[in-house]
Amino acid sequence: MERPIDEFLSKTGAIELLCEIDLDGSRFEDLNDDLPVSRQTLAVRLREASEASLIEQETIQGERGTSHKHVLSEKGILLRMQLIKPEGVAKYHQYNDSRQQWDEKKEEIREIASEATVESPNSRYTDGVKALRCFAQSLENGEKGDDGD
Image (cartoon, rainbow, N blue to C red; front, side):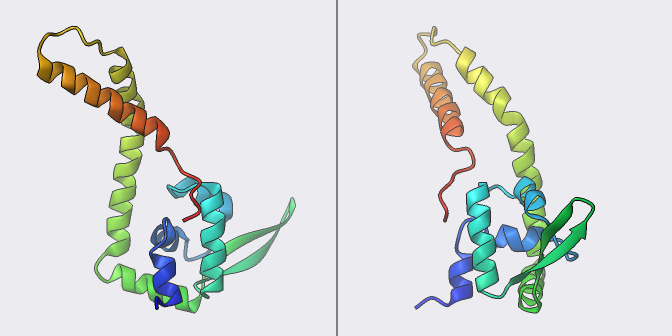
């Protein structure tokens, strides 16, 4: 039987969530902007992290009323420290930077694929264009999913 924290960490966006929460706390919208998961998945992960006692919610009084931020609990901080040991958070940020660079190039690849024509009798070229179109289509279908996992 899987332990609750192990189960949580195996889910999409869980480790990323622990890496992205600022030590002073993060608001939902900030986390949503920073994480490669849907709003629905983020909401589920926050609830699960709270149930696993990894994060806590704090109330913030602002000019526009009451708001909330999510902060790592003592248990969450200890877990994040374990992620840091093998430079896990640093590697995650490298991954995130690469993902953002990829997101910036995706549209360019889609445009090239949609403009490519299969005019060459060279089957390697034809196969390459077909593969590029298929890849571009998979990018369009694979945007932030609402899988809840």
